[in-house]
Length: 161
Image (tube, rainbow, N blue to C red; front, side):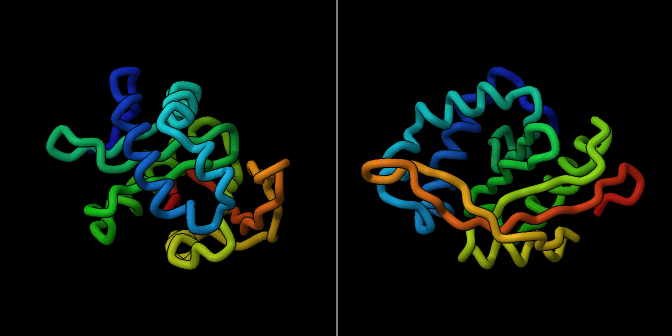
């Protein structure tokens, strides 16, 4: 079941976010950014994103979530045990529809360069590579640039796929 998250979900979503981020994103990040991404970091982030968070719940367990801020879909994370089960595609479609309902015409997401599996998934879902961008993350002594693929998709309520 896909539904809007509520305050009682924050700790479960943050725990999922922490685990999956460290599994899927840490390989593309500098050590300082990995250390920075503590469970407290994810608790704070999910508290701030609560109003735009969807969760997929199966058997009373949160197995995936998505969240956005404006046109930027910043989070789509699925527990390893639920990958390849259409949970991600269903959740992404639901997020696209909710974003379109909010009046967002074109969604944007950033996928770490090298995360080829994620990029292939987004492309199968109708997202298009627009540009390669740099985002600043924590480095050993100062912020450093990490490359991301900027991907976009025109969002519609009726034809979102």
